[in-house]
Image (cartoon, rainbow, N blue to C red; front, side, top):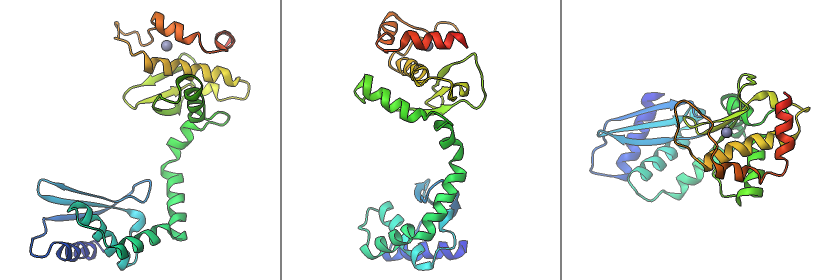
Length: 228
Ligand SMILES: [Zn+2]
C-alpha cells in the first residue's frame, strides 16, 4: 500500500513537472480529526501526510489527491477532473459517516469540554461578546475544568489560549448569570493584560473594576458565588 502510494505520487509529479526530478518523498497516513492532507517541502524532502480515513480509498481517488497536493505545492493549476473526483469521494456518504464517527472519538475531549451538561461556554462567550464587546473579541478555547476545583472559579490559560471554568458551575442549580459573570470576568482579563506582580495571577486595575460594573447582575452573581 505505502509503496503503491509513493508510486502514485511519483507518476503524478512526472505529469506535472516533466523533466525535473522528484525530491525524496515520504507518504504517511495520519490520524487527523478530519479528512485532512498536508504536503511540505523540508530540507529538500517532500513530506506528505494523508488522512487515515483515505487509507484504502480507490486508486483513482488517491491519484486525484496526489495531483491536487503536488499542484498546490508547485503552484500549478489543479485539473478539474481530479478536483471533482476527490471532492465527490470525500463528500460521499460512506466517508462522511466515517469522518463523523472519528470526529466524535478524537474530538470528544475538546467538544465535551466546551459543551457542559447544562451550559455551553462557547455560546455564553459569543453572547457576552455581542452584548458587551460588539462581537469584536476573539474567542479563545472555552473549556470546563477537568476536575471540580472550588478554589478557582475560572482562569485564563495562556499556554492553551483557553478560558477554563470550574465544572462545579455546570449545574442546573447555578443561574446562568453566575456562569456569564465568571466568563465575563475572564474576558476582561484578556482585555486588560497585567504585568504580573510576584505570583499573583488575578490582578484587577481600576479600569478593570469599572468595566466589570457594566455587567448587569454583578452583585447577584458575586453574592451567589460567595455563598458556595
Ligand atoms: Zn480576576
